Image (cartoon, rainbow, N blue to C red; front, side):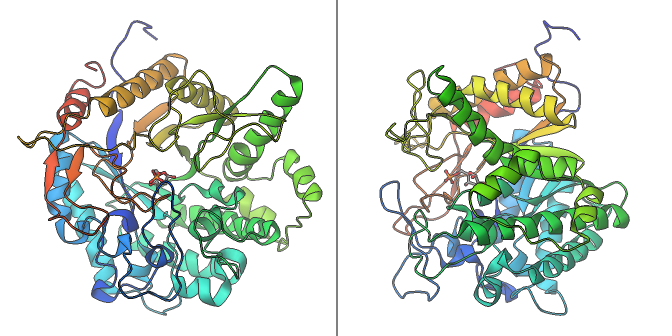
Length: 481
Ligand code: BG6
């Protein structure tokens, strides 16, 4: 290893990431069914988006049109190619393939749409990286089974996987089963993560929670993911199938051992529970005590342990945006973002209270690699910010360049530390609808989209300054930052 080397390893997969419900629109086009994302209204940092099982007239539902990628995917992928993408992470909407999740035959129009997207990527030598489930199961399954709470959904998911694994065989190599599967370790992960909608839930940020049901649902997802991995390998031995975990990096707020312990417990539950099951194929020992102390009993079918062992993932991917602190003192102020936690006095935050911590990414990469020893990819990272279009049409997003640059530097350091990091797909490479707030105003893209929270905008795309910068980064394989 040359420790002075500025470039990333040869073949490093530079790219970007999106998710179907946050970009496509066309929510009811060509046979698509209603997904859990389609019943969420717009919101903001201060007003939670609402969940309305019955769609309200006159209410704005951001996923219904999103940024209209459904009709503009060719233009968008051409822009990704212009930046030099080697890989593009996107998700398939389950509801385009099985509108209610229970049809006996898949919807050909949906299959064809994603085949077109894949072919368009391949035209530019962009490797597709497909998330099979990114926060949007068919709403019909939520209604009928309370989502993943019911074991029956496992087979429906596996069938969906089999269909897409067979259809795109030979064209796709990289797959991820569930996006940020560990969101189900938090109450906010009910609807988005596990399709659970408990009676009385109206607000996305304050969902009625039943941890017993939520962790049972997570168990069903583990089993479904493991079955999918096994079947995927049987369909095509070249398939590389990974997990995707939201990295929730945290530090003890003080050196007080009580804070250190609190932090360790938090990291175990939020980061390592899911990784351990999906990479090692067994529940970690600490989970037993957590379940017992919280009155949670996971009901397992006799074959489940075998299934988990037989379906461990080939690589580990994660999202990384921020970090926070943990304290044993319940009065410690929270960092004011979706992850909770106490504020770190050493870090600055973006306008949504997400603290900016590139060093945390290096630490996370080292810890994860030491624990699992399989290839890693950072499949989400980026800065949500308000962007301004100048009168001459330029968008000078130097703050975003700064953020991404520092995180790339941190990844490079981690590679020098010995971490086998194989790719980087920054989130929202094109502006899209925010998951936590439902806003368009929270922009991540290198490409600006003229679409706004009041539903106005002509959807035109513009290159931000970060577009030209990221293009140079890729062309120089990370040398020119
Ligand atoms: C991740 C999700 O949690 O973070 C994405 O996988 C999401 O779907 C991203 O968009 C950024 O979060 P937000 O709330 O700023 O959109």
